[in-house]
Length: 232
Image (tube, rainbow, N blue to C red; front, side, top):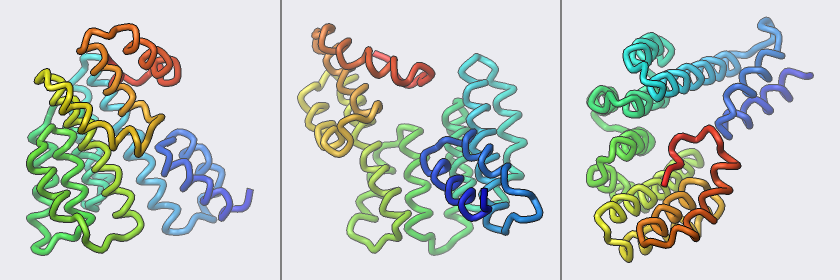
């Protein structure tokens, strides 16, 4: 129950995207014993939780309520690029794509010499908006440049997301051979990840092999019952 141990545990939950658990762990640190970093992490957690609620609200068909919630979330960003990227991605998820892209474009406009990390944040939102060409341009520009540990992880995540989304786009054009070639490195990178395996299942379904598709798909649904992105 020492503050430092609880803070470390909170950081781990946040890195895993377990926002509820992160919030509960941080709440065990008395307010008077929290450092500035702990309080900043608390804001990050609150923003992620609120944007997740907005996305789920939109999926239930309550888009005006979701947009209102995102509007109220803006104060939590305090104009920090990382937080603005979370908000921008949420706007894309609820269907307000241009609003999300405008937020990130403003981040770059306000920084005459944007950092690599800021460019990667923008690329993430572009990918979520299915703007593959622009996102790909940024990823190619960044390739080979020195990156922080966080930047390297972000870059690897984006390359993975880019391949999965491009593979889905090629499948939708019925170019299954090219789609599989695009997806293969992502499967090798993260063979058990639901996003890549789900994309593979959709390829099998598109090729008419529904049995193999369901073999892949059924365990995903069992393990991720609330994941609305998993669909054949």
